[in-house]
Image (cartoon, rainbow, N blue to C red):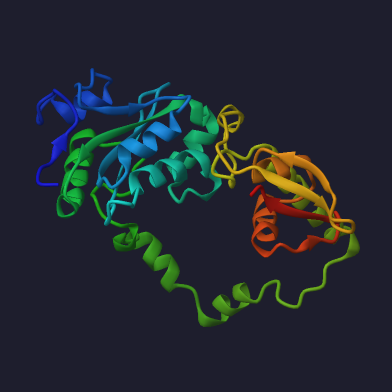
Length: 277
C-alpha cells in the first residue's frame, strides 16, 4: 500500500474531515461506515489486511472513541478484530469510559467507522492527528500510542509511593489461606452461577463476554456440532453452533470449546461434543 486513504470528501483542518466526521457530516464515497445490525461477513472482507484509524461513535449523544489497528500481513485483520473486541466483548474492554457508555446505551446504538487506511508507519501519526482535532470524549490517552506508554498523574504516583512494604504484603495476602464460612461459600457460588447464566444467555457471535441482547440475536455463522450420548455414543441432536450448546446445556462456551478440541466426555452431562464432519 503506497498511499494514505482518508475516507472522506471533507478536507483536513478547521471544520474539515476530522471534526466534521465526529459531528455527523456526510462521509465520502470511499468511506467505510458500519451500523447495527453489523454486516459481519462484509466487514471481514472490507478490512482484511488493512491498517488504519477507526472511530466508534455513540449515535445517541455523538461522543466517540478513536483507535488504530495494524495488520502486519495480508491475512491479518486487526481492524475487524478491534471492532469485535469493542462490540462483542464489553466486559473485557480496558477503556473504562467506552465500556461504561456501551453498557449504558447498548452497543446497538454505537457505530463503527474507518477514518483512514494507511501504511503501518503512518498509523500512529494519523491517530494522533484525528485525536487532536476531534478531542474524543472516550479516549483516555490524547495521542496515538499504546497504553504501555501511559504515565500516571503525580497524585497517583505519590499515593503509590506512600504504600509501605508491609502494607503491600498485607493486601497481597489478604485472602490467602483464609477460610470462608459455609454461608459465604454459598453466596459466592450463587453469584458465580448467576454470572455464568448471564454470560451464556448474552453471548454474541464472538462467543465470549457480555454483549447487548440485540447483538446477541444477530445470525451466528459457525460450524454445526453433534451431541452424542457419553455412554452409548448414540447421536442425541445436532446444533447450529458451539455457542448454541452453551445456551441449551448448563455448560460455559469455553468449556464447550475445550471438549470439542479434546473429544472427551463431559462426565457431569454425560455427553460428547463433536463438530459435524
